[in-house]
Amino acid sequence: MLKDEIATCCKALKLSRNLVENCDKIEAESHEEYLLKLLRLELEHRDANRKDRLLKNAGFYTIKTFADYIFDEIKLPQGLTPGNVGTGKTHLATAIGVEACKKGYNVKFFRTAALVNRLVEARKGGELSGLMKQLSKADLLICDEWGYVPLDREGAQLLFQVMSDCYERRSVVITTNLEFSRWASIFYDEQMTAAMIDRLIHHSYLLIFDGQSYRVRQSLMRQLS
Image (cartoon, rainbow, N blue to C red; front, side):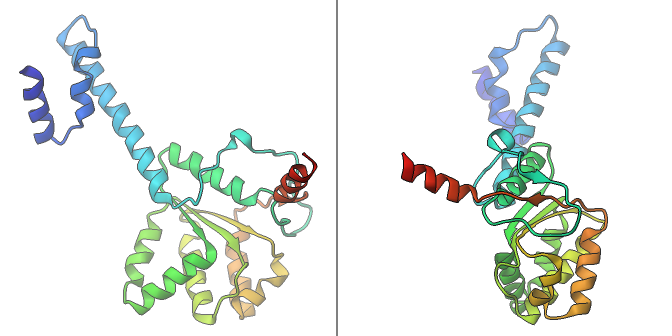
């Protein structure tokens, strides 16, 4: 059959099966128009698959979007203060990452403690350069729950190295409950802490999440229902 021959050619040319399936769906007035429409559908299919891969490889714990996000309690700050617990920081960071994936950007999402653990394990296993190379390919690096878990000196130094490599090369999103004055308790070194903050706040935007925890609200709503 003609379709089988097309499928064989597609496989040899590393084209998707989707191209074969679209053969009977296209109407065109010339061979050139038919081929153009077929190739456009193939490009759309490949683009959709690439964005799906980006979402899968980003490492999101759950997929959250802007569709159900409430912006009412986010404000631009007068000073540098932290965000309250449960006020939507992770949701917003994830939604930004998801949108970036949909636009074709390479995103990596980590809980900060998990990222540090991976860095430490990679160094011990002689694989740190490989992991750093993977991180360097990200257009956007998201570090969630920054400062929730204390770091040892080695972990702090490795995290500083990652942030330094990101500086002015790729975008970074950080969610935290700690104001900058308390970051020295994370990194154990005031000079390294100052250098870290200096790199992060340059070119940055700071959002304050100033409201009651969504989880608390939902819990109270369930009790009253």
